[in-house]
Image 1 (spheres, rainbow, N blue to C red):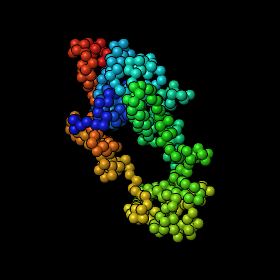
Image 2 (cartoon, rainbow, N blue to C red):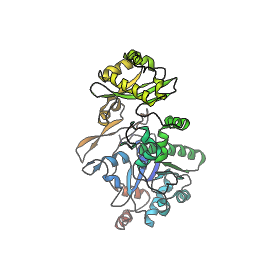
Image 3 (tube, rainbow, N blue to C red):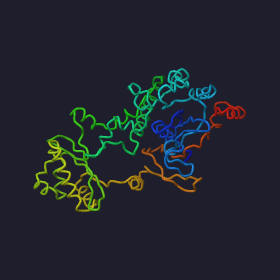
Length: 403
């Protein structure tokens, strides 16, 4: 597996990044063959080495977000440490950091400094609020991205308080958008010979994640219909919702505007809804009470049989429906497993295989290569020797606590 040449083989990346949004872009690139050097603080390392669920010293958080990269410890507060970083940047294609505003400049790895060293460098900077935000000077986490962007309402349940979710959707969306933005800037640099600074944020990424639902809210000046997604227009409504079966097992369905009546007919619900004056889904746009009545009636009807029965009927009629998985159920679902969206990696120190994320991409000629996260400073000697440092010089840098 180590001999696989991924789609990004040859790409050189240096990242002074921690947390999720700051590390996942480069982990994804490492999966695809890029040479990624992660800069960590000597002795202490990335604080997230102890985050998440721990199997001994192995962290679910750190492994997920840093697999396949190389670890180089550097004291960036020292002149010698900064000199090593600058040598790495001179040979790199991409540099990434997610420190709070002002830190990079203070430690001499701001864009203006690194651009002079390497004019073709793509400099990616991830922040919480965005570079031009009034709160841009503040630190922030995934919760900030979810809370400020409107995501909390998008996933809310009517009558319940707004809250952020357990899945780090702001972090992950920001990471994926940063990944794409970096590659776009890199392609441009290959054509023009000029690098540039790319800035992304947790708030901006989570806001974009809401797509057309946010556009609809802005255009209509009304909040979205939550609990179930009833969309389209009064005349041509559609619905996306989840319902429980007779055993309390949830399933999802989505019906486009031209599918509603046909679906209600094949399900055997048409006459029952019509009898109660609820067959017109467009009533949901007119009245919150009618929307609730329609959803409550559907919930009542779906609770009479098992979800496999309803899913089978809908699928035979070419309607969209599927089971709603828990996170653990999802990790064993054949639709996930068979596509290699989840895989297993051998952890010799634990003497066992552990499930990890696979890859969301399937390349026909340059497949992804799933590796382990590095031990702290694991690649110090390897990286520094390539920069021309001798064994004695590396030993001195260790004694001086530069690495």
